[in-house]
Image (cartoon, rainbow over all chains, first blue to last red):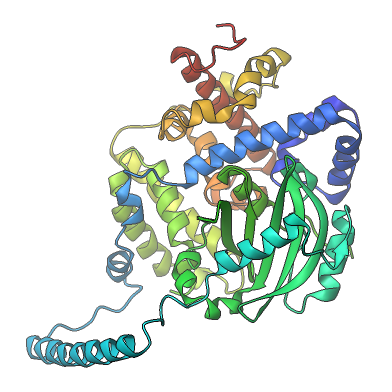
Length: 271
Length: 181
């Protein structure tokens, strides 16, 4: 495949469409042609930024975030409408008031005794950020080292007990260098290490069930969108993809992290 | 209900980006979901629920935009001829490709506004791909058009969107380095 043919198929490659043979041929060409590899990387970056702008509402566009879904579903007849009886409402209100009072008293007593409950709940971003720092500084070596996507994919499939997908391809700008296993708040996690534009990047993959250990994240991630945060100078992007919680950690801009995140598991496993 | 929860945000953003009046999103979603659940017996459990529901929402958006008599630009015979990306166009795009944030960060809703310069089908395909994250095959089911048309119009939409961004950048002097007008 020559440069012109390769560029003509950029859309298919970026959208992970077309057959495996086409992707293989494009990958072969990109490995040999630095000019095309750079062109693909720039095109993909621009397109990811455009998609990001379309998907993420502006700060002042509150109407998108605040759409009354409960009302919509009730009006559409999908969600049952609760019966309104004034005496029932009054009784419920009184019961709720009494329960709230008991809860406040109980919570105050617990807080007085321990003062730690909410603060000490584990933060997935903090834990993954810590592991990333150790791995990128070289103080923690990954169990498996390879620059081949296919080999890392095979390692993950063999080692990880929960369903897991393959690492991103090179066209997302992610160059894989190894993988390993770790525990994050006693939850088993796989990590893939590599780099984007020379900056170390780690991808953490947990089973979706692991979210029970991180209750503060459940509401953020249940909406199926990419959630961004910062932890000790590291940018973190996370999302639920299939049955995995996937985090991408590194000191690069959000758009690049999002792109790596979206590229996670974008080709079928070799049979 | 369980099917709906994970896609609520995608539906909301898709509606807001596709409607002439984004504040009608709530009404449009309500109408589309009402009709979809009235037809729920036509949906086969285990098949693609997301694509099935997006079809209803897309049709409702079309009706709403028509009703407000603000029809989007119609795809003409001439404009249906797909254009290749010329070398010249690539050359002009170089500065945008080198530093896209310089343009995109300048105006938050620039991309959303440029999308409205596309034809109806181009816009539908681009938004279904970018916001709905649909595969080409799924878009053919939602819009009931051949896969070749999806591929061609998506490529064209992307190309035109970049031209729009480039034009905006030129008009606002955002691409001064090495960029001829």
